[in-house]
Image (cartoon, rainbow, N blue to C red; front, top):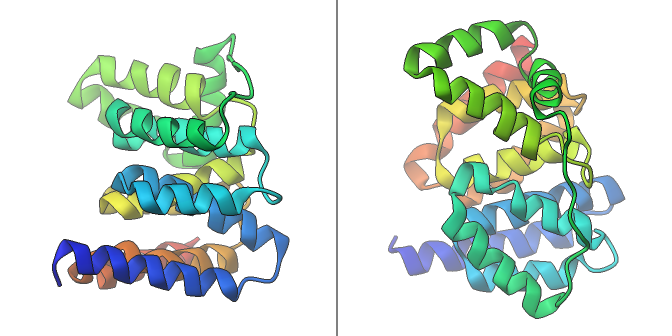
Length: 219
């Protein structure tokens, strides 16, 4: 399947999934995931379509935050392009939100997400490069993932959407556990990952399914 056909396929499948969602909670999870995935995929048509759908379900700040935090997983260029599309629909931003104590907030958030693996994670990051550890805590978990505008549960759902879109399977494993640690129900995680597997390349779908099952059942 060429890239154009794949894009058409996942857009259609996501549209069909949306039609079957009845609960407000699943609607919010779906929209947060689809915004993060569309930003990561740099799919302008998909992003524009779903931003319009967000009206009445997500507040502007929630839409912004799901896009802004994707900076961590997709980089500045894609986040900038996504925000350009958002500004075509919502010309004014909801305002600036800052975290004063980035290090402490980052430590606190990281401990929730990684639980008993928090210290080991920092050790692994230090072995890769000590500055990476500091950036992860201060910038990733402090400056960005501790911001107001979304709950940690909602942020972890958006993270999963972005990681599935980019095919980052090892980070996906860690954040499946992080989503559980943040308080998301296993049944909701399984529903979400099943819904969004359509954005995965065919050769990755089975691997993501196996990892989801392993982490949820072993939690």
